[in-house]
Length: 199
Image (cartoon, rainbow, N blue to C red; front, side, top):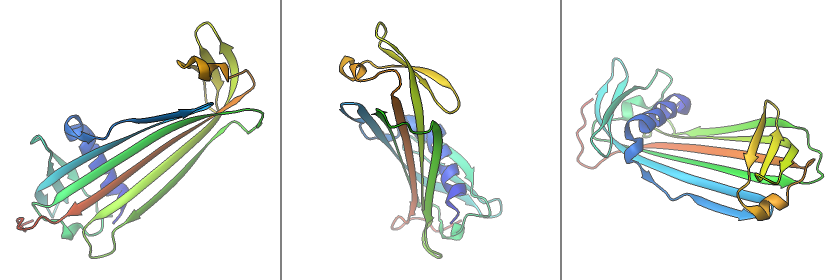
């Protein structure tokens, strides 16, 4: 299965049609001196209500009855394994971590890493896709009055307010901040016992 096609379509469907009614895990926040991390999980389960084999369109019905039709392009393998009544499970996880770097002198820049995997031939469609973006920025200004630091990254300069006064005290002009954003999307199709088998 080409996860980029199927997962992109399903994640868009989940976000637009089912997002308001998704089961959402609690936001997890942790911090230590000079570091903080926040993460959240979004889970959606939809039912396949129609499949058009000629156009490769799949209609999904969300938990509140909202329906959306997506196209699973020709690069999606195992398309024929999907049946009306099957469940499509989408799980999306994202996390952001910030870490203060003192005296490291790293090059300001941005790096991106991706990874993916899919179901074996003949199995029910499934896939996972992940991406991690890391940005290193210089602290070029510190404003104690507003507890704001100015960061110059590889593409732009931004002001970032630090609400925690203890964390703010640790930051000085000339330091660096490393921000890492990670996201992962997993999709799998499950056969429901006794579900209809028509396409």
